Length: 154
Image (cartoon, rainbow, N blue to C red; front, side):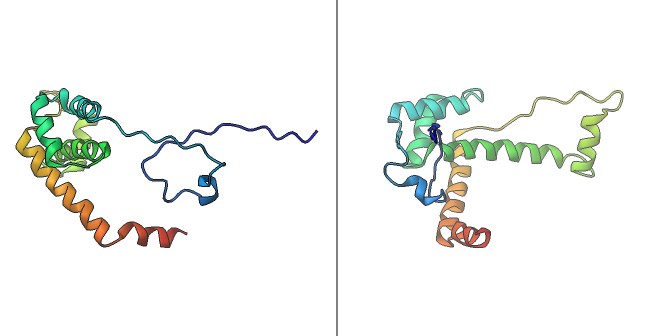
């Protein structure tokens, strides 16, 4: 009566290099690899920037400037633009984050309402930030920062 019931576990991710090795052995896990077609990848990246009015042609140029980069690179690029816009807005307040938080929590009478965050998105800006992000990623690889981190948490 010792029946071991098998339960399917579905795992998604970009890097399974840190996953418990015995789980990855053949027979223990069925692996399905997905690599989007170039047109599919283009549409996914275009969708990320569509609400900012970036034309599909600019996305094609952006992607050809960074060939071989995964989708998460372009997601990180978008996040970087948003982060910089938030930081720019916060610095407009005299005491930075503290004043901005007070304003968000309790705007004074007569002050305008919190406006929609404006994110500057243009091909030159995307390329500039993309090159910076790419350099940062290369730097992390070169100094093997992730390997050092893994040593200290094991």
